[in-house]
Structures are given as C-alpha cells and as structure tokens.
Length: 262
Image (cartoon, rainbow, N blue to C red; front, side):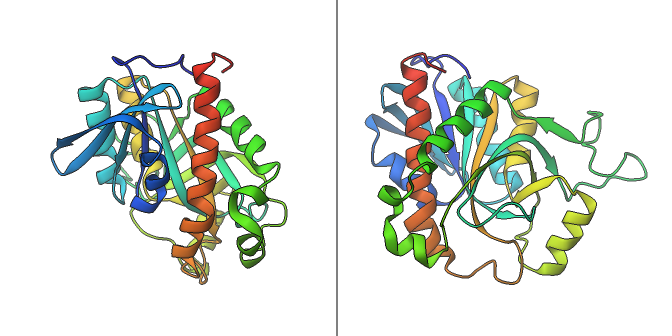
C-alpha cells in the first residue's frame, strides 16, 4: 500500500451510505468540514494518518464524481471504498468480507461498437485494484474476523448466522441497480462466474482512479445473497455488523500505514 500520508496527500475513505461512514467520522481528530458541490468532505486525522472522509451517495455517477473531487481537489495518495455488497459466489456468505482484486461494470454494453463490458475507448473491461493496498486491507480484515464476537456481540452473530465469517479476494462487479432477485443474481453468475460480489459504486471509482493513477481498493461486507431476500434486516445489518467491521478493518489498516508495516 502507499506510505503513510502527509497533509498534502491524504488517504480518501469513501462510503455510499451515512451509516457506513458514521463510525469513522466519530473517531476523526482535528477534522475540518469542506463543502464542494453537494458533498461534505471531512479532512483530518484518523489514528495518526491524514485522511479525507466523504459520503459518495449511491450509484456509479455519484461515486465517480466524488472520486474525481478527491483526486483533483485533495490530491489523495490512495482511495478506499467501504460498505456493503451482495454475494454472488456460492462460497461467499453473509457476514463475510470481500476485498477487491479487480472491478467490472456489469451494466456497460456498447456493443457492437465495443465488446460487452469494455469501457469505450479504453480497451479494458476489468480494472485492477492496487495489489499492495488490497493485500493490506485483506490482511487487516483477517485479523479483525479472527474474533468477531467483541465487535458485533452475540445477538448479532446469531441473528445473521455469522458463525465463521471469512475474507475473500477477487472480482467485484458494479452496476446502477440494486440486485435483489434470484433471476438477476443468477444471470450475473452465469455471465461472470468469477464475480464474488455485486454493488453499485466500486468499478466507477476504479475507472476514475485508473485515469488519475491513484491506488484504489474496496472492502465490502456481505449483507445479503443479492436475491429475493436481499432487503431482509438491511438497516440492522449495517448498524450492528457492517459499520463495526468497517471501522475495525480500516483502523487496523491505517495503524499499519502509520507505523510503516504496510
């Protein structure tokens, strides 16, 4: 991952929903709120590292616009996206963590001018996450999930069946729709059998970061199976599981960045 940041090159930390970011915001020190457009960017220190926290809102356009501001106005040395996602792979369960190795926009199709999923005029369909950054996040996630009970409590563990949450690394796909039926998830699995999880922002941020040369990776906590049960207890999951996982994983990773162990 990149070296510990300086005031001139903070790390950008992004989430799509307020509940996914609120725990980290509460821990910031000497923070300054900066309004740009319709966004609030929180600049300050988190566990000894200079960061910019921002709520991107939901969807690829909102996420890409937010990433472009992080790159152009704040000069971020790296960007991390955190939040929930739906599982696609049968090996990925609720409460597991997926860290990106690459991204793809599953709803991009400019054929016959360009091959399906290829981002026009780039020659690429899949965008790689920064390997060192992804490795650091995955290692931090494994540390955190070694004992999830202190984080979420016994009631949440039983409510969501989080008996042995695991960390996975691989392809995360993004599109501008909330995948919430078995028909949709099956179609995505058939088309992209190596996709581990689906969400609505990551691949768009990856495209911006690729163009700006900024290291990027995402850490996603699995809230559902991206099928007909995808909305069950979603608010409770974010509050009692995702937000606590995210805070612990990001803080563990930032701690390693601050002491130079990553």
